[in-house]
Image (cartoon, rainbow, N blue to C red; front, top):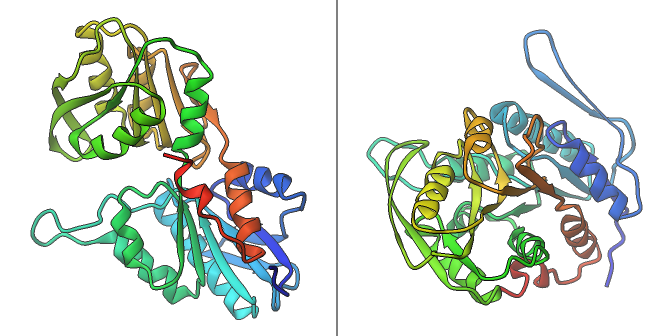
Length: 315
């Protein structure tokens, strides 16, 4: 059952390649929008076509520069609301500030909640995102939120490699629940890396729970930031007799020393999706596109159809 709104898709400046891929999958063109910065750094947005009463989808990852891309998205939402869009859906393939989803210490913010409130205050009617850092973030929204997953896509890519005897590796105890489902889907044993995080962006891998000797190992995680955890985990797997070692992650932030660390690591390959554009990546880093999954979700939402089949990819 469809609706009476005409579908229009617009891209912010954070990930135009993914937006173009989504538009291609939907057999349509991106709408025209003028985005620029004033000399003092303020962002200006103006839609260059009529969106009154339209079903508007705004595609923008809030990856680095996080604050610039976040503010740009908020201004796009506000501009669409004031242009009388019929419905405004923010498609946020990577949801920034998601790691601060609770108070782990006194006098800390909960930025994942703050961002949700900012999006709603700006005027968004619905949000589509991919592999939130924690499921509880969905409860921060009072508008519908669809948290899609790229894990199934990564599983398919790793399965196609026909690696023989494999082990699915959780990079820490917190990821064990999700990786248990992945291990079951891949008919492989689960291995857990036991680690201690000393401070932000730094972790020390201590030991592993499970047997990896002679196996090809795949570490699955929702994101790779500075790659310290991933590379330390890969080394301890190698030290315990693993053969080839791979990493698969939905969000490749790859900030700071990440690219150099991966280049020098024991990884055969690091597979990420294009929720974040991968500029300057080295030969070990491979990218697979989320365009088809996101396009399916946009089409289904526009037509008021169920998208539940896209959430778990049969995990």
